[in-house]
Image (tube, rainbow, N blue to C red; front, side):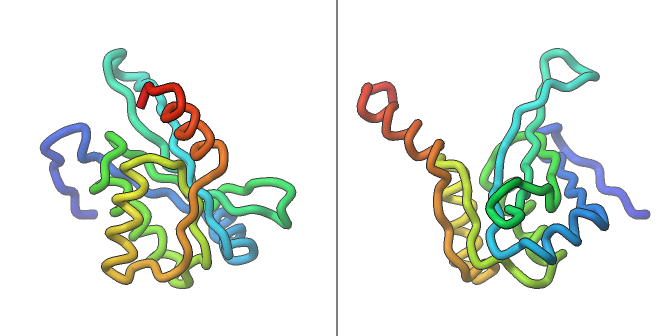
Amino acid sequence: MPTQKLSSWSESRLLIVSQLMTENYTKWGECVTLEVLTVNSPFSPNRNFKLLGFLVHEANTKMLLAGFAVLGEESVASVSTAIKIFLKLHKKPPETIVTPYNRCMYKSMKILIEERSFTGSHIYSLPGFISHLQDKLSGSS
């Protein structure tokens, strides 16, 4: 298996999709929600990495994992690349992608839409949007 040396931790990316995750996407993949979690590195106390979860909704009752990416950092380049690879892997894009309301997700989705890698709808998750509005109204953002 060919390997490529990464010049920094922030460039590291890994997309994982199991057979069960593929089945979840095949059955419920009309709408994919992206969630970002920060995880502390078990190998270096001063490092953390991001998990980008690709979630689908089973009949609007529970969320199922359709894949996840391990990113060195949440950047436009790493997020847009992870989403693009996820979409290529599944061959059939979702009709809608729901993301947190932040600049990185906005720019990542804008790139995918402009490249025609994604032609569906992009909407923001309600909790992220409300949080953004609260920050704006309180003057902290």
